[in-house]
Amino acid sequence: MAKYKEIKGFKVQTLASDTAVSIAATGSWSSGGNLNTAKGQVVGFGVTAAAGAAMGTSPSLVTSFEQYDGSSWTETTDINTAGRNGLGTGTLTAGLIYGGWPRAGKTESWNGSAWTEVGDMTRGANASQSQAGGGSQTAAFAAGGEPGTTYFQLAEIWNGSSWTEVAELNTGRQAAQGFGVTTAGYVASGYSPPVGSPYKTANVEVYNGSSWTETTNVNTAVGQGGGAGNATSGIIFAGNTGSTTAVAAAKTEFWDGSSWTELADMSTARYQLGKTVNPSTGSTDALAIGGEVPSYVASTEEWATASSFTKINLGQVYYNSTANAFKVTALSAPAGTWASGGTLNAKRNIATACGTGNSSNMVTGGSSPPTNHSTLNEQYNGTAWTEVGDLNVGKNNASSAGNSPIATTLNYAGDGPGTYSDTNESWNNTSWTEEADLNVSGNAASGFGVSATSAGRAGGQSSATPPGGPHFTGTEIWNGSSWTEVNNLNDSRRYAGGVGTVTAALYIGGDRDTGSPSQTANVESWDGTNWTEIANLNSAKQAGKTAGTQTNTIFFGGTPPLTTNTEVWNGSTWTEIGDMTVARANHTGGGSSSSAIAAGGETPLSPAVTAVAEEWSGSETNATITVS
Image (cartoon, rainbow, N blue to C red; front, side, top):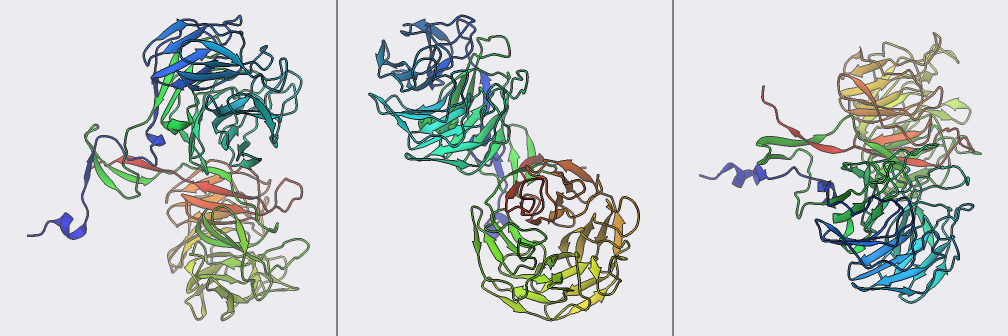
């Protein structure tokens, strides 16, 4: 007789550890051996089993050099010139230290037994401390830094014998975290102008061998921390998150080549620490050496990852033999973060959007100054927006068929030139086709549905009511050929958020025509027949946007005032979670509670109508199965 797993191709795995999204996600910090002397502003190089620590202050400047064998530190040959806040790279038998105060740009090479002074940096006396860098003994880079009065944009490359100035950073900064190599070098976060103020930036720049380009920001702006790894597998850790006083951090963030993810924290928060850069080992190996907490410490911590891992897969069931428990991978809510996304080609607000997440989305129509009723249509691939086939009729304040695949969606109702619109167009991934009109024309309604053949529209303003109110309570359902009027909302309002399917939808928040304030936190649920009032949002708002399903959705942005607020719905309660970077309303949104996008809208920025987009990423976690 055939076995179930032979028929279904499925079995429950036995694993010694939980599944993970990446090898870096399996990493953790553990205690290493103590330095012989507690100190900060140390320069490190090597790997956790064979590292070196030079320079530093304790509190006086030192020339001491200590070697690490994976368990203990041993003092050995001193460096030639004392200093602090320099850089180091290479291995324990082929290391390099450079810069620092007050070393006047000195560079020293280590061959495993002796230090030799080699070519000085180009910057001169006291002008090369608190830089970010990486690379190897024969190919290193340094960028940024400060001499006490200026935050540098200056960058230099070491070729094994001399330093050469190259293209400058876009943003001057000091005490940033660096990692990578000379053809793919990263400078992350740090302090940027105004000088004299510890103003932190989340900005990240990458060098390709000829120029610097801004890339995805870190989640937490920090200075005086550590960095290690390379262009597709890097980490930054520890540092100072304070504003007017020092606040030691323990956070670790992982770079996969496109985004930052928070990993396991360090045991001891610290800043002004030494670190090993090691681009060859990626994010699998790093050492944090000494530092300040704020007093000087001698402790070290070792970062290590698993030698292998099983990739996390939503819905996966497995047996953890270490914990002696069955587990399942599920969407973690509330959880998730917003990060910068690609910028629209045209700034706009009150447009519509559809799509499956932050790597596949489409924004259509809207008001795109100076065009009030735009026909413009743009698609997003996770990196950039591309203009595709325009609408036949320009409009703003329209509705769309929710979070459908881009290839089959609908755009309907809204404001046409000089009138409420009842037009309805379907998209086939190439062009728009006019379909049967709605029964009632109107705008500022909320759309829901999953495709060009299954959509709904509720509320808003309409030709069925006088201008200015009362707002519309009507609901219409589209079956692919015609619209049918069904049961009304309980509460008349406009500029609400709509999400779900034609049999399971939500109508969230919005603007009433009565009461003060007019904004509401009211939420109604649709079961395919009736609307029922359910648990309210935590805060009343209108013109926010949604992504997800009737039982698992996020609602983000809105007004008044313009907000960055994000709330997640788990089917019974609303919980406030990670805020957007930019406050906005009348933007577009779409996707799921684990992958969504917010694009365009009205913001406090100048100009008020923006083209800026943000991407939402929710996390998947492993949960123990509990049998009751």
